[in-house]
Length: 112
Image (cartoon, rainbow, N blue to C red; front, side, top):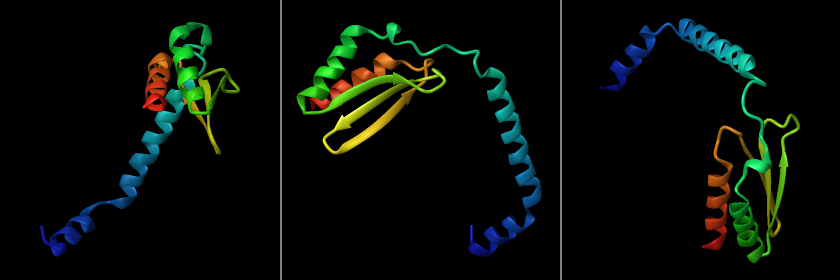
């Protein structure tokens, strides 16, 4: 398509309608998330596989790093602090996600 054809196609679009559509979708998504808030699983470290937790700790500690295990303020997600030398970051894992899978990947990343 030539530049002139692209510009004509752009001119045919109703930008106001597109924005309204996006805004409406955003509002509906926000309302749906609010409805589901508090009805999902609760993050609980007791559900994590202790063998995988220890493997992650050992792999990170072997390179001089550390892990911090906690929750978000509302207990809606796991909070995993990763300290690697001067760098520190916190990863948030929803209870609907597999925290064991995350920790296993973390252990493999630090082991290699």
